[in-house]
View 1 (cartoon, rainbow, N blue to C red):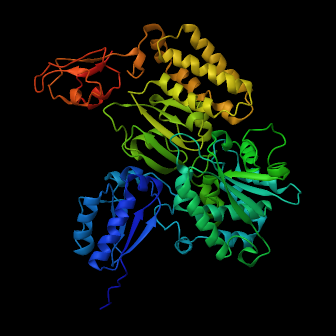
View 2 (tube, rainbow, N blue to C red):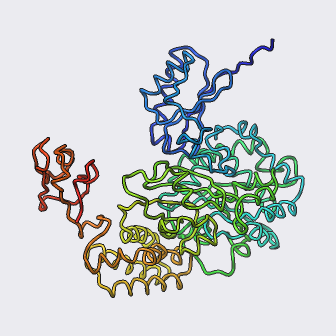
Length: 597
């Protein structure tokens, strides 16, 4: 009889920013304390985000027989129960565990339609351990690339059809060729990790969860274009990402995957981290380079393009985190295998940060060609509120709002562009029927207006005037002429701005005007907000026939504007002079007794 192989049990704690924010540090502390108190041999190791931010804090437990269990939505009490019953007594807590293989279960459904290439190691390995990365095949792509040579690398990337994942979708191989063909004593490679979109956290999660994957991709790219110096431009608001990048760089140098004479060859590549100050405009290539040079982050006219004259006047190639994080996989598996995923013009996968009124928020890597509806309904689980889904904002503040009627649109650069939106870096905010699309446009425009560097007149002043018009409409002071002026300014800003910030800033306005014009007209003609969101245009009232007297509205009202007798149906009313229109009464009412007019 063959002896049963036993191994030391391991607990992986999700210690990405999302996990830490949800309380994972406390879970880790409890685990270590319980292990010490009970004198049991169990390793506790950090891992990154597996993408299910909605289930954090999470742990993965691999027992001595190699069987794996996942637990999510943890709190200190749950963790102690799981430890005492499962880890000590060997009794799995099936009601609390997550079955990632079962597509009928929420966690399994979240992963079912995903194809994980960029995120393949996220939430799987210890991001601070190069050994775990190597065990998963790490740096094999680099070794292969160094043997095959520069031409082979570029050919494989070209075969893959990989397009830049930073927003514009420019062919990666073509961009590399432009830099490669330049004759210069020095060339630079820059990773753009300046992720500034509200609601976007794709790059942060990759940097925190699998930093070596990015480093490997950068070294391969540098070798292909002939660069010996590189920068990772990462916003200072990502301290955990920067910490783990620094650890990964030190480890890669120690193992000769970075630095001088990489893997015994005559190729050397030095890499530095440049912390940005959080300016959204520095996501634009030329503004980013100005920031690295110690100048104010402002775009400059092109040509010359960065490939010709970039950082300090030298040829420079800039790719974002997600683009470079696909390179090692392509080297190992081949460009054709990557191209087999996706559509004719948009190959491979795309990572999305899912946020808003959905049941399953987090990170999802889906194949190009999947529909918006599949992402929202199947991956994200649909509406988390009692209201139906109304629209998605895709592409961040510079993207556009796509209505539910167009949710059969596939995820493809060209198809998304046809709607008036852009793919962007991958932020996807889901809105339900309670969202006012005029107010949504106002919110995103206020962001881009504030983030404008001010260099272009139409971007600086045009966005300000557009925002003023939107604020008037939301306050019930707009006129029919307001819409004409708004659209006129939007096109002027779009067509006359120097960089991508100004050129795309009007997208939320133009798409909401295109698909939700009736909401603008209701604000202007009827002085009503159909979604019941704009405070100046709504009044909260209690429908006495629906009121059960549960008292929830009165208890939660911050200004004591609601009066009524507890348990007496229909006795509640709102004092309009005291009401600040916060909407809490409507949110807590479970009987649809509170309405907006």
